[in-house]
Image (cartoon, rainbow, N blue to C red; front, side, top):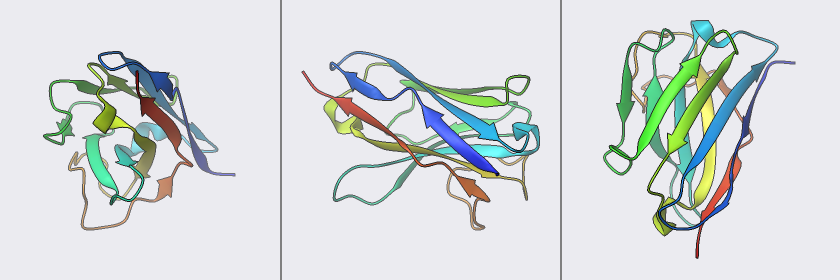
Length: 127
């Protein structure tokens, strides 16, 4: 079964850090661009970062730029999202998504659909 699985979410205090992982099952990620998205209760889904298949290109939403870092280890078939200086407004369910059709393009919101989505991992930032 082809699927993406996010992990690493949890409860963290403001100013803290978390590292999310996005692991693939049933396929290899090295042919896919990977995007990270989040959705807070009552809000629209927000694209926050994307990395190309090689890891050579990455982009970030202004809301996370300078605080979050996307990376990938294709040998481990995993993409990471390092989140620092977390704030309550970062509270959301975080999802990763994989796109094979244009793997070298690292734009977050794509005019074509991502091929696979994970089930999400909850991140809660609260004191």
